[in-house]
Amino acid sequence: NELFLALGLVSLVENLLVVAAILKNRNLHSPTYYFICCLAVSDMLVSISNLAEMLFMLLLEHGVLVMRPSIVRHMDSVIDTLICSSVVSSLSFLGVIAVDRYITIFYALRYHSIMTLQRAVVTMASVWLASTISSTVLIVYYRSNTILLCLIGFFLFMLVLMLVLYIHMFALARHHLHSISSQQKPPTAHRGGSLKGAVTLTILLGVFFICWGPFFFHLILIVTCPTNPFCTCFFSYFNLFLILIICNSVIDPLIYAFRSQELRRTLREVVTCSW
Image (cartoon, rainbow, N blue to C red; front, side, top):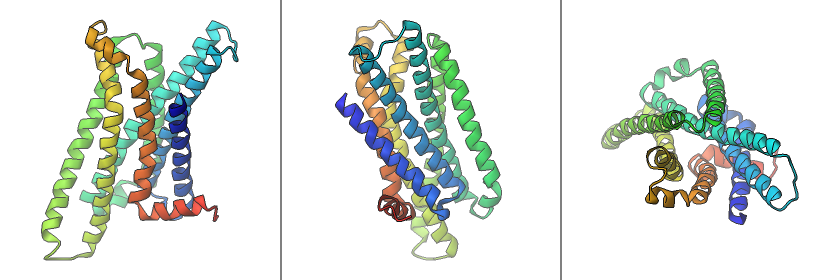
């Protein structure tokens, strides 16, 4: 519980700093950083919802909080809905960011006409709305294997989509490495920055897969072999999977801070309160 609480608090503070830095620096007011800001908000929701559930259960176990069983079930459903919504939104925004990076690299000259601020706002609103609706349906029909299969399928679809996009982007990066010594053009520097962002988000994707993979494998086992001894043994490590989820929320802001010079500078200003 102490480790869980410590990781949750660190994640909450880190993601708050990322959101504050993006809101403070007008140079970061672009669709790409707005999507990253939404991802940070999703990570905050992961931390807040898991911390709220842990504290809620601890208060009930120690008799500090006394509630009727019906109210406890209602509160648990609300917290679970918040957790699921943050999970779906995190995965969705990783996919959105990957598509945004892809457009930046392969359609650099048309990027601002393709990814307008209005389209970015519509995309963010759609993700949040879809995440809320889908998580509500998931909690209401959580006993249905069909619902679990839909969630697993969504995870696999987004994972494959991002892998395909990043492989294509790295193919372009390798091509630039071969040609950069012979020719230098202004677009090369612009694309170089975009490719650096693609590397950042690829690291983020790897971290996401490592941290969330066991949880979704847990869901797969629930559907395929709920009574198998091996599966039952795997289920006993559920608390470890929750810690990995919180670790993902802790690592994400570190990747942004160390990979983006502009965001790192603004973070220093936010920390030192030089508003």
